[in-house]
Amino acid sequence: MGLILQKWGNSNAIRLPKKVIDELQWQVNQEINFSITEKGLVLKPAEKPSIKGLFDGFEGRIDEKELDWGQPDGIEVW
Image (cartoon, rainbow, N blue to C red; front, side):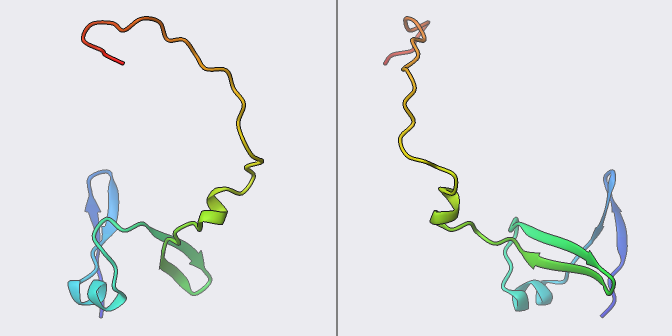
């Protein structure tokens, strides 16, 4: 199956047929990572970070002073 590189705004795009998207179980607006290898272009779904990965480098409680933003202004109510 051949695809055509087309102009899309200031960029270029390759449109993937619905059959391909369905077979890969990809979704519209899903983040896709790409890499360029000696064999060509490789597309893979972006991996979602694990909860552990999200907290890498976190060393516990953050002790910062509460900021005083002043009195409400206009219709702000806190």
